[in-house]
Image (cartoon, rainbow, N blue to C red; front, side, top):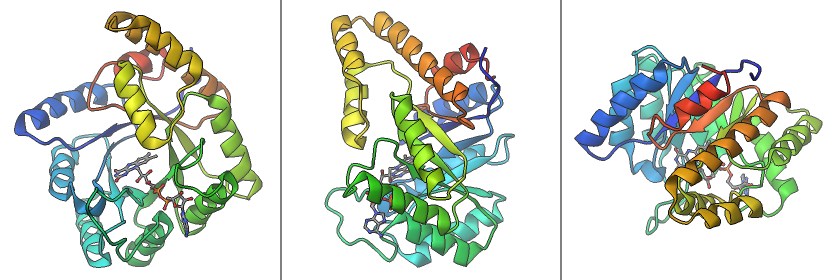
Length: 278
Ligand code: FAD
């Protein structure tokens, strides 16, 4: 059994009433595992504003704290301030602060072009009310000029007032350990929670990885390819790979794990149970 560390679960806002109803069930099921918090994503430029708010309303005050994601690119300070005030009035005290990626067709970076600007703005506007998480990229953000510059910019986000970080998903634990080591050498000592992406479907995984710049090691790609459409084998292999990854991360000192649930109970629940983290 692994050392006990906290877990958190990420949801995205649903598009339909039926989807919202399904997510309420998933929320109840995952809540039984006693996560530290649930987070709910937010489309850049405010594109999911109403849906993110409605998903938050479903879960806020129902036991486990909820943390809205808030992205700044393409948005105005005024609209972001409105959301911060609303969240504060609803008793929400944790936020995931991101730059976001502009939806195609939308132009203009807005008043806060980078996550550092958003973190600074949250501190100016709301003082110390929010515990702020930011994004971290152990394998480098895909648009960064270089790994070193990305590290410096990550450290700037923390110096601007962020408290902790959640990472992009990855399958190479050494990338995570190296990243944590590098920021510590810059004098940044904050909890960095690895983002865990369960493996259940080869083509979806490859699509997500291509979209986010996350690397799928060759041996995983090759092994997944040999299973073709054999979903049971993909899930069994994926489970084993992700359990081993989490075990290494926990043994190496990861402070908590953040699961990209894709709005499903399984395989997240089984991973948490098998890791002994419930
Ligand atoms: P930043 O930290 O601002 O960095 C973005 C890029 O700009 C990096 O390459 C960085 O090196 C560079 N940079 C930073 N500062 C400067 C500067 N001053 N000058 C020049 N370059 C600079 N997206 C959403 O839209 N909604 C979500 O809910 C969401 N949730 C996420 C949750 C997690 C845990 C993660 C890891 C990502 C999430 N994303 C979300 C995706 C994220 O918005 C994108 O990865 C986005 O491209 C970068 O966001 P960031 O906050 O890391 O940006």
